[in-house]
Amino acid sequence: MYDKPHGSPGSPGYSPYNAYHSTGQWGSSPSPQYQQEFPSRPLSGRPPSKNSLQPLIHDHGPTPPYISPSPSAFSRFMTFFFNWWLCILSILVSLISIAIITILLFFINNRTIPTLPLNIALNTYISFFATISKASMVFAVAESISQLKWLWFRKPRTLHDIEIFDDASRGPMGALRLVFKMRARRVAAIGGLVTVLSVVMEPFTQQVVAYRQREVLVGRASVGRALAYDARVSLDTLGNGLLIGPEWGMKAAIYDGIFTPEKIQDLVPICPSGNCTFPPFESLAFCSKCLDVSQNVVVNNPPAYPNDLTGTQQISYTIPGGGIVGFSALFEEGNLSKGPAFVSTTVLPDDLPKQILNVQNPLLALAILQFPHVRQRIEDGNYFSSLPVTHECALYFCINTYNISVTNSKANTTVLSSWTSDTGTPTVGAALTGMDGTPDAVLDPSDDYSNSNHTYRIPAGSLANLKAWLNVSMQGSMNTSFSKVDRTQWVNDDIQALNKSTDWSFLMNALATSMTAHIRNSGNPDAVTEVQGLAYQNETFVHVQWIWMALPAGLVAISTVFLCATMFKSERKRAMAWKSSSLALLFHGLEGVGGGAGEGLNRMRAVARRTRVVLSRGEDGEWKLVNTG
Image (cartoon, rainbow, N blue to C red):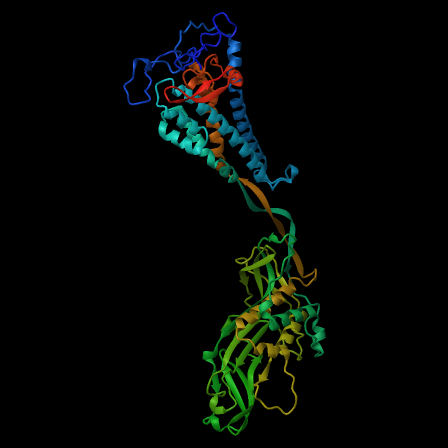
């Protein structure tokens, strides 16, 4: 049914190049880009025939001479631009997107998290432009790979290569096949590699931005420093025998240290931001020392038969340093009727603290004896069969050098060094016996310890009053739980608290810390000054990790070079910019289908719009697309 030519010579629709031959072939003029003949591979295993040596696109009919007009330079440029404008636009969009990301990162680097338009997160903007850049880049690369396909077939190639190029232009898996096919010997391999690496382009851009914390100065901080301890008490007040004790704040600090030692902390600085630093500074403070001397205690005049003791007995122990601690106990018929389980005394030789603790003239010298092994039955445990657990402690004035910081609203106080006077803070007399001869205490750190040239003062009245009150309050005893008493007796609160202690170093340190916090925050402008510090605030800022931009920016740059190389290579070889067009295969990929279509892509599209084809089986049994008019 297709044995009649369309029209006749001289008729309007007649053309010798679009006549459908009786052999089932449409005549067509050869493409200028296929001017050389090359042997085509036969479709079967038969040896090539003479007819197989034909151009890729040929005409079985007569071929009239083809004379191509010489276009002007401007016309050639416009044709070139029109053929590639979409690819050029795509690569420009990709470059601009990467540039926008780079500029955005440059301006926000090392700055606080910005508030961007529409309140969209920074990573969202980066992801958005990275997606645009990748999509535009991949499009340009895919079109370039498709264009290189036509240049590849300028020479005899296997028909299978068409599928390799087409698959490479569709995605990473096909591109990987192309890379292995070309093995870096062809420009197309670069496009395939770019397509494969584009898979990780977006994750890399997401890694560019990191959010970190830093401290920024937001204001000032302060913490108290004691230059003196002045309770505004004169010696005249003590001369009449009236012991009023220290100021209420100091009493509260002492009770806190004794009753709740586990809760005591150093003076908390005023830090409005919760993160502050201070320069090291000196301050008047209280220090303490304790020593377990249980192994060196000696019981004085132990009885030969302690199990037979009866009545009231005087018991005493000699402790290291020459101190003697004595008390009375009542025994009845082999049992301890009444006796202490705890004894503390402040009546000690003046030189004992220096000998044992290396502290001269402390504010408080204390000896503590505890009897955990004393039982009601004498034979089960008594004051002679086992020695008491004995500690010697001292509380004294000192000069501490502090290093203080506040982190996340938690104060950290470190004592860098501590200085103690060789003479201590001596007093004259004792509680209720007159201390009017007590001099003011002056602590003057040596030049080896301090360069501040500052002296720290404790007026005599404040010193004597505090020492007398401590000596009275911290001295006493507490009977065993099974002791019999004649009348109701109230036990001193201080002694009850002391009796519960098993870690005397910890207790005395808590007492010293609590008292120090008070004198550093007493509110007395003549005795306290403020140390100024810096207040910082944690700030989240954007840190750009530029190394992660290397791959995305590099891929876009390589894609740009790849596109330019493809365009100029095609122009140099006078190849038509068919790229990924399927019409090129329909019109020029098979013999006899492209009659009258020409070589221009626009011409092929125009013919395609008015050309109808049908998939029909020919006389030889093969399926072909046949032009139906």
